[in-house]
Amino acid sequence: MVKLWRRYKPFINAGIQELITYRVNFILYRIGDVMGAFVAFYLWKAVFDSSQEPLIQGFSMADITLYIIMSFVTNLLTRSDSSFMIGDEVKDGSIIMRLLRPVHFAASYLFTELGSKWLIFISVGLPFLSVIVLMKILSGQGIVEVLGLTVLYLFSLTLAYLINFFFNICFGFSAFVFKNLWGSNLLKTSIVAFMSGSLIPLAFFPKVVSAILSFLPFSSLIYTPVMIIVGKYDASQILQALLLQFFWLIVMVGLSQLIWKRVQSFKEVSMKKYQRMHLIFIRQYIKQIMEYKFDFVVGVLGVFLTQGLNLLFLNVIFQHIPSLEGWTFQEIAFIYGFSLIPKGLDHLFFDNLWALGQRLVRKGEFDKYLTRPINPLFHILVETFQIDALGELLVGCILLGTTVSSIAWTLPKFLIFLVCIPFATLIYTSLKIATASIAFWTKQSGAMIYIFYMFNDFAKYPISIYNSLLRWLISFIVPFAFTAYYPASYFLQGKNGLFNIGGLILISLIFFCISLKLWDRGLDAYESAGS
Image (cartoon, rainbow, N blue to C red; front, side, top):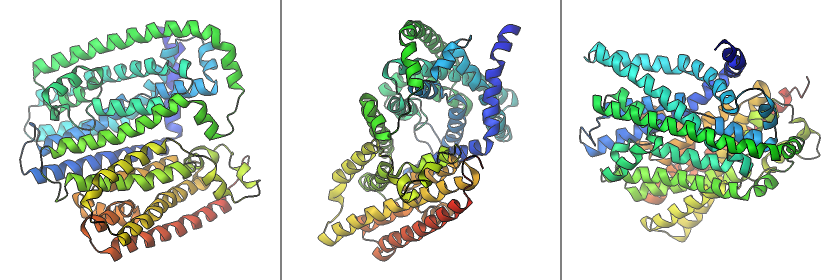
């Protein structure tokens, strides 16, 4: 046991050290994640307000609120990035170093994650859980009952993480065949998010679908632990759920061992190939994408599926209510589709700004843009072509095409629509330029980009479902409401064209000027590599 601890302690320390080193980055990413929880809360609040029923499928608004909170916490604590790490290491050849170490392949990832998970639990999970426990006790529930459910939740949470880890290990092994897992990981994340109950409780689906999803391993990741802590399971249901988690854990561990044996035989043949890959630098992003055609197709499918599942989520909701704050399903679908077009265009042409915020300044790679006889901002903007954005554009066009009948189109209105798209795209790009420029001072601003970018989720739905503070925030501080909701209001309801359309043009130009000014200031502050 001591020998085992000495062998894997460095991996635990590495996981802890990575989180401590970039703790601000970690906090900012978590703030970005919370945005999704806020969107879900206000959406469900609007659902209950529109339904005017105290219970929907046995859930009250208080139950849903607790479900959203604990779903966020549980997802954070059970998340595993092992498949992403394996995919990246196989693609760039660095997997060789891990394979040569005298440790178990999967265990090296497990103990690295355990180090970071422990800190995440102490800093995020424990405070949230403590507040929930205290609120339950103050509401009149018995202390023994609450503490018992909490212990069972923690036990279920542990099983959920292990299931997810070994599932990701199994999935990550496919990188030895396909060499790149970017698209596959995107598809996997979309499917798991939907089937695990993180988007909507499985109880809201038809009984047959709910029964099938509840049996699959994905329900054990989020739905089972959350339903335990929310108090929606009785003793027999808890026992059945835990036994099912044990079953899937055994399956995933056994499957990982079986696949690993095949990988080891494959490794002997491919070692020289990986050594060559370790020396190769992929110089052009578009070539890299086209080199992995299968992964690209799967990635586009993942984007398509992600948006499709969100629409399915809305469809399930609208089966219980006639309208959402006065908006019909078709109108919301139009707003959703409208929001995807500028987002997709920005993603397609200008997504290299993420590289600036995440690594170009931190690693000193930005110097190359300053030594070439072209504008560095222009160079960064046009250097890559993010083809997976075609999935967003396709879904957006389909939604607009299927909801076009809800608008009385005229030639002037159609021309205004065409004008709105580039200005809405400019808002996305301007915000990315501004937040990416912060890296010139902080060396890394990927988390800041992420936080601002996550605000776009609020723009997918009518802002009338949010409170006044949020409406003001997403209108004038992070103005994603002007990328979809305001112009869509003009087209759908003929509301104030001067504000909805004129405001879009004015806001986009103002933020573009601000972003260019921040960029220039950042260039002046840039210290270059080795400074």
